[in-house]
Length: 514
Ligand code: NOJ
Image (cartoon, rainbow, N blue to C red; front, side, top):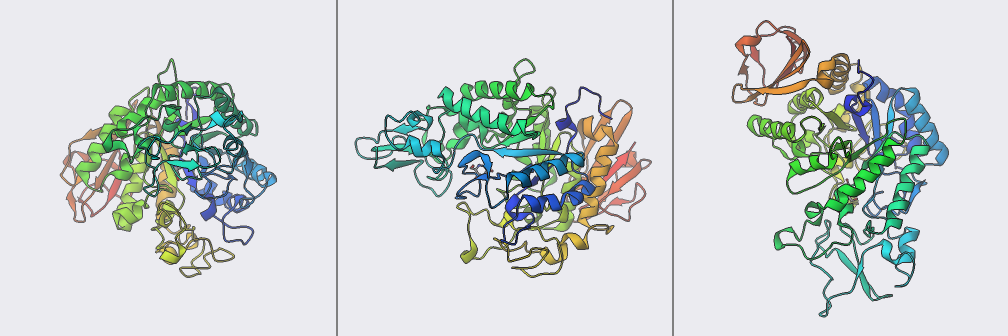
């Protein structure tokens, strides 16, 4: 068991829910809070420790909730305050924790703050956003391009004859964190949810808040990626103050930041130092952006280890609501199974994306049903709870959901996997149980050991306990390491395997105890 000083989030496995796509309780085709509550037993049985909900706040939904019109309000499409309290109580009753998605860089253009800000140049909230004059030739104030749609990151507002900054959609104006009133209001929104009992936050594109009003022209090669170019000392200063707020709460709330920088390893700097801590966790998306090849994966994971060495602590993410699912990227169920073993046996806090425990592929979204401004509908396809349905309807959803189902929904629905020994669901459940059972998997050091070309081998160790993980990245057998002939198999993607030795099967991943 963890000693008392181990923060819970180092020991936890977090499960990300995209609420619109999880479970629909009121038959409007969009998932909601009561739908999530109805699946809490499923989640507790799976064995995850914390749930992170993508945004549930009041929103006109231009970016499906990442455009917030009230940081303290629940959007009616997701339910009511009472639904939220029921969910939080249900989560806590089952010994899990709940994280909300906080979107500090930008609000919705329908947020009352922005409505006021754009109303006149001398409105007290004018400076809550980033307003600038156009250039003399009528071009935008600076060369920044939006992350979406290839348009300038500035929109001109005729009413006051100035332009406002939006690194994402025009409906997502960037807040000006250099204004202390913005900082105070946003910290109040954290307090609001912490006082209601939430256990922490995932913080959206959090490195961007450090730009303040420092938005001068970017070098040509960075013009289309302002997000990746924003790494300013002021951001760290803000995060230190945010951390002080979190640390003032006894229940140890945690913030995991989405830090997207040009050089991946730099996200580790957002953890701060033991004397001046910032985020508790900072995502590193190298596993998402690395091909399923032994040498590439080993190199990416080794670099993460260096970047997030103690006193740092890494995360491990294979899929989320912004990228094609790893089942789709890797192209086979066998590889997705092996990847699950890596995700749940490496050092760090794993973040699972709802449906990966079912081996779901992305949905195939016909042009007429595309709704996302950035082409991410596929990975947001609804979760198929039952086998009974087609591409468009059924699968435990009371009416046709807002997006088509994953391509493999029928064969991979939850009801045909739970309790079935060979299923992806059982593999995840077993891996989660193994991680809970073996402290070395949660807390131990990790070391990569030289291995056969297609195989990666890493060892976790803590005190006298030692676990070895072998992963064959090839679709042909690989030799079994001679020094591991006597070890004990504790889990394998090959459910028939009970003994060490022989050969490592195609795409097999095996966990051994020494
Ligand atoms: C990152 C979120 O994950 C993504 O879904 C969103 O569109 C952008 N930030 C803007 O908030």
